[in-house]
Image: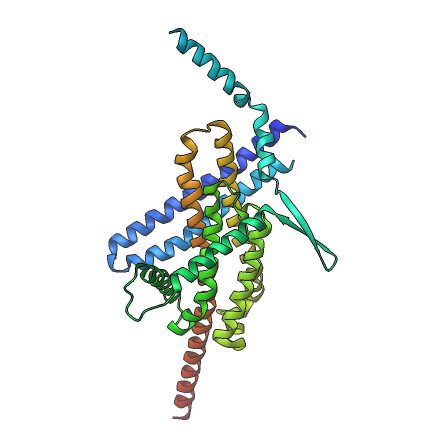
Length: 75
Length: 276
């Protein structure tokens, strides 16, 4: 197989996933900050929910990382 | 000046073989392949003892020593630092359990397992400080942990809400969601194990790469994040998610019970109105 194409594919995989995950985490964090600025008394609860959301968004980027590592080392 | 010229020439000659980019891929490949130290035959199965096995048994020994040291001679009013540390850690876990819909008694039942995986994963990820490859870079390790955890989650949630409550949590808010909720129990271990594996494996490869390319100063700085902070973070996330999974079942069982009671009340009112 062509190693150059595999390298481009691996790079694209992690780059696109990181773009999406970063966008999602940024949007969620921004909204969470807004919400806790409006209602500081439930800031703790919002932080807990934000953490759960961030874990799931971050997971997509990690799946892409696994895929791109597989592309590099398995082929 | 001649001295410096000689010095730089010698330095370049020393480092030129290391700077050639052709060998890096092979070196990293060599680093990520699991090394087997030996194998034993158990009932016809050939069990390989890999580096991950040795590292995780080492961590278990450290954990055992720590547990005995921290839990020795407990006092009613803690005066010693080690007991205060132990109580702070347990309290932290208790608070996390309480914040995800568990009662105090349920939280106390969950803590032994959840605390064990928390410290076990955190310490196994921290082995990379000592240049021991972390066991979680071997896919078998996170998969085994995730499968054990999801079985534990199902067993404990059945214990807490009963078989009926578990069924109710599967069919809440509507029974059309049942296949997806069952599918969820197969996706959860996959996502748990892939998250741990991907993070540790990625960090390990990056650190190996940096050790090969820039063997001075930089590995120490980047290791603060990739070896220490990331490892601790993954341990916390794994624990937090397994607590949340139990809490989810309890919450939806509770909600569905509440919904049924409300419906029964509405029906009773309608009946009373019809009778009047």
